[in-house]
Length: 253
Image 1: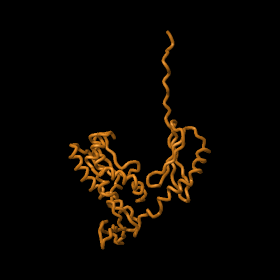
Image 2: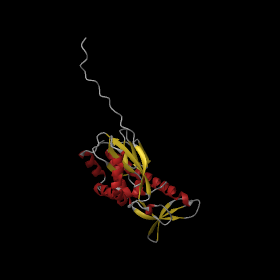
Image 3: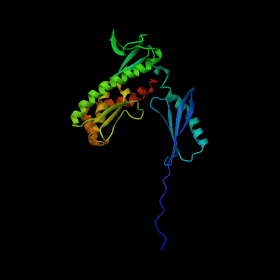
């Protein structure tokens, strides 16, 4: 018998798991995730939405000293970028939080019981929050989730009827990488933080994911359908690009 002339199969190497470490930037300690990528030809450093974490991609086999040198060289850049995410983003009595694009002054009522409610008093938008002070961020997030659910349920139903498609489910999450998603079986998922955006931005997000029920891509046909559902699409996209990161900066934990 002649020996086989078939080439041996190449074994696909599993990429190494990401490494997590801590990086101090101007007195702040931030989690840094480092991913090694065999296809990477250079080092890249990104700030996660909200400015509470960092992500770095490096070529496989890069020496540790090169990683440290790169991070040292970019300290000034990180300080400048992270300065946008200051303590002014804290949720406390007297601070402000957006509800449907309108800045509301947070008013801690001091009452242990009661609803969180958005009111207008003497021309000022106020978000009244009851409960203990340490529970204030959680109660605000609960309020925003409820408002997001109400707005998205309404807009998704209207857009789904327009395209003649059914929605399997609608889920709210606190996602960082995307504002919404649509699965092949019609399950829609949204970031509840969108409740802080203006109504036309909320409507665009609903239209975007519903459009995926018909076009599971980002082709010209998809964008044409999306624009038909939401005529203010381009303005909404610009708003998210300018302000989306700041919505992620608020810490509700």
